[in-house]
Length: 501
Ligand SMILES: [Zn+2]
Image (cartoon, rainbow, N blue to C red; front, top):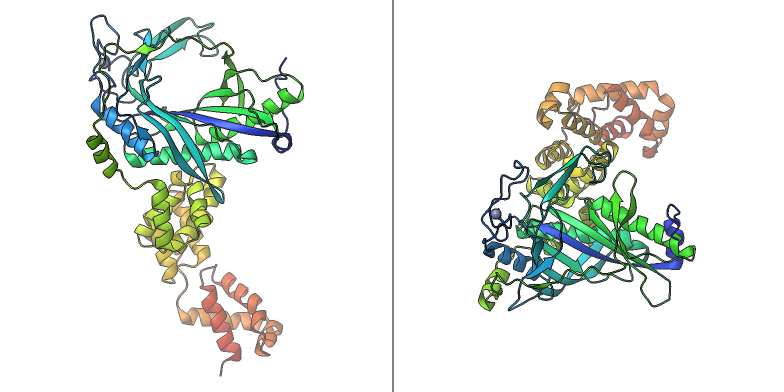
């Protein structure tokens, strides 16, 4: 039996086992109409308000392929360095499920539109090339809602409702080749892959890729084999993992769980598993020990898809700049090391820094504020950097005030806190709270003189030529001005007073 509930600590599991991961990602295309009919696809519309005889599977209705969905899929395939099929067909995948009105799903089986590509994924200090097995098109199913039970599942429910708005929405499935040799970085690689894929698809303008709305969904395959065994273990498939963080956690948990199963002498069961956001664990779903027979056959109601070579080349020529190319360009423009760019990207700060630079800040200043104080604020609040209530333009304005000497770093942090708290734009905060640096030299000089008078021993050391001893005097002036002085200028003034001519 499997040792469910028992886990091997991750680091320990990695000493004895080598993981292989694979990712199957579904992307809902933003074509605004469905895959085989003209129904609209607005998110959150009233149930069953976006349906017609074709997507309801009524007798006598016939599907027609959405040309834009083909074009979008080719765009994704080309961006993933795939070969685009000159001729391919849709297939019927036959199974019964109440939220699938036709009793079959139109998908692609042995003739996918795009095959054999790759995506370079930045992870910490290196780039990992993830192979792409295939990119194919299919239609989404509807959605069941089980009402009255405790679990939200059909067992124990009083009744069930079904919404066919989603039935027939074009989905692209992107399947990686097995990713080997990542070792302990496997969870991080999985997350970095989905992040890079999401940003690429978004840059291509073919989907809004919102994981929280289900327009990007991810199934994560994980297997473990003893180190040096030269073979692969049995894989599990964790379904519908719906955040980037969960992708990483799901792989990590499966590694810890499967290591315990293997350690106990049992075998890992080939099955789908469900990921639970609250506990970060997975539980067993459907067994895949016996392959389900979907009785695939070519869809007889659709003509084959044969994209003309000229059209494919037109699409290729019009591809926008990929995120990886953009990172290389920004690295050149900003003169930062590659590792810095990767770090910014991995914490979700690259776009924010780019927008802050576009708003007039220097790359160094933009990076300093987003990775420093703002990252701390985001961590403290448990939110992503992009969700902080401050805009890149506001950060650029604060950086400009610091550069002009109107704010010092400490005051700038106060301004940031006030902006985050909703107190208004930086300039409004500065004037409303009197946060500007004391730039009145007369007032500063008076504070310097008072500090010297209060600390004669320190003053004597500085007068004797020990400029580095001035710290307590600077501190006293900063305290006297409520932190509103430019510390560097105060230091200068002290030296002028004590060692000047
Ligand atoms: Zn329809």
